[in-house]
Length: 371
Image (tube, helix red, strand yellow):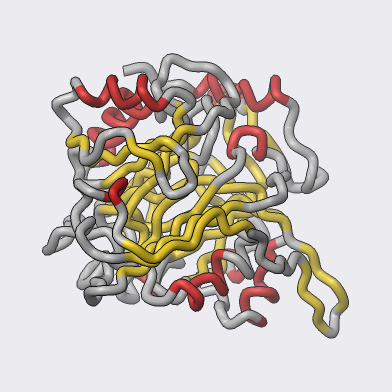
């Protein structure tokens, strides 16, 4: 089923275009950055350290109680493909964990989706790992795709989904981010962001029921409206061969009142803090989201036409979906490859729809961290 997809925005200034290149990363707030990176490296194959930076989050005031927050962040990738992890720790305050058990259907990003080319191999690997809690066996989702759920030592729930496309073969049992599962108050309202802005125009299923493949996840006994979204057109852009295709599952619990996952907490506290998309043409997106009722809450271009992110540079912005989820857009201008030798990928003047050559993308392997 395809939803009508609006890829351009008309205004008095003419037709503006945008380009969403794929999920760049899922933000993961943690208590201890080094420990968490090492665990994700060893267990999830997130061993490519794109950057490692300590700084102050000066522009996130709408989501940090109006205060500038000291932080430490690592962007990690998996060379099998998929989005990365932005592993993020508050250093100017104690990271605040939830004061309640997060249940499926609670508002915000509840589950991170990881791709795996061999679902049984991944399941068998985690079945003997004492650090994880396997929540389900291998089941099939309503579309017939094999998957399972597990919980890491930091209480994050991950879904491993059978997905055959691999960018580069590695020893890992899985690839990177395929997408996420988001609890929403009203799916039809939230589609205004996930379909109308983020261009997830294909409805794989839309079912209201109780679900056997959820059994074992906290809150699984409830009834849900469950909508799986994909994009019918391949993503383009410099890093699109690594990011690949993606999906978002929207979950609306129908027989209880959901809780905001970040109730009494702020952005950057432990859990899934945002979903980030690599894009081109920030100006076009700024005008579109404002027209559609979701203006930027954060916009780095108000400070500079290319914001210094430490080892990287570009522009970033945020919008907030109806249920409260923070969606980040990043227009990348510069990425470090071999910092000691001064080798950077510079993308600002590159044709937006053209992927980088495979040999160049493979150079990210030089940033592998062995533990």
